[in-house]
Amino acid sequence: MATLRRLREAPRHLLVCEKSNFSHDKSRHRHLVETHYHNYRVSFLIPECGMLSKELKNLVTDTGTYYFVKNLPLHELITHEFIHTFIKKGSCYALSYNTNIDEDNTVALLPNGKLILSLDKDTYEETGLQGHPSQYSGRKIMKFIVSIDLMDLSFNLNSKKYERICWSFKEKKPIKFDFLLAWHHTGAEESAMLSFFSKYQIQEHQPKVSMSTLSNLQCPVLQSGELRGKPETSCSALELLDWLGGVFCNADLNNEPDNFISNFCCPQPSTVVAQAHLCTITGFILPESISVLLEQLCHYFDEPKLAPWVTLSVQGFADSPVSWRENEHGFWKGGEHLYNFVIFNNQDYWLQMAVGANDNCPP
Image (tube, rainbow, N blue to C red; front, side):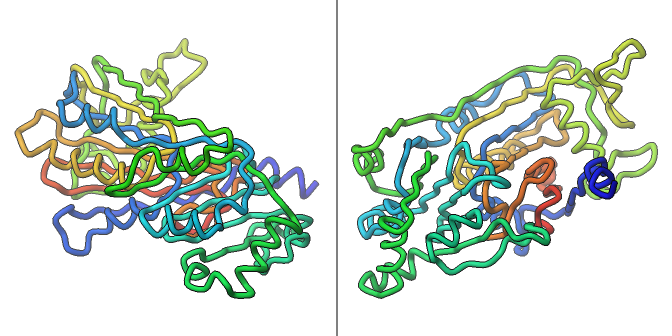
């Protein structure tokens, strides 16, 4: 009965909301974007906008290349050549693909050179590597976390520690994954990763872009200084986030009595805008690309606009071993880890960060 009660319980969610200004010295916006490593969807909504500017359109259509490599042995990510070519000369990102964080072995490579492995009990014991139990394992420990600092290993590739890790991945417990890979760099050839993994099945991909114009959209009234909202004056950050979710899902937000699919409606007070532009980018999207997009949206108000605010929403991969930085991420009933910026025309912003049941509080 206790198990049934737990299954019926609504999963715990954590939402952190804060406000600041992009010009403040202690603003955290850059750090929060840069340390949310594995992003699969980026959406922005601009009220009172029918067509994107040339600068924004160019950014959206050029958010960077990523690669899909099939059946890549894990030991390829710890070779001297890989570390020297990609990790030391840029920011390299990798994530195992089609692996479920709560059931399968999963792997993530972070731009600081940390290789994070979330391993089941049998695999962990077979590798013989040193790690620690997952904090979401419960009483019976079934998952273990192993962190390997490739930058640290690169200083002494003749060490016993490096040799042991290589032996573990190549001979004792060879493991293969389908990987998503991306590399942010300057001055290197775009085809370097294609050439490096040419003996494997590797495909080059561009993020998919979807644009739409929403007509007569009812939007919440927001005031930058009122994060909690004000009765009959402005809506809160939480109300806005719920409403955005409905917009992104293309839900009917009219709350009509004969609508049996959705009874959700725009929070009050609200205003109707003639048109709003919604753009969604889907793929393996790097923090560096998101930082550039955020900066461009900040400059949207350099010239007078009818819109009082715009939003930028970013969702991470549900089965990534980490959410922000090296914080362990789990799935349980949702696996969500996301953040949303509301950018106001006076350069104030709201930042909302949300995670699911198996996550630490957002940073």
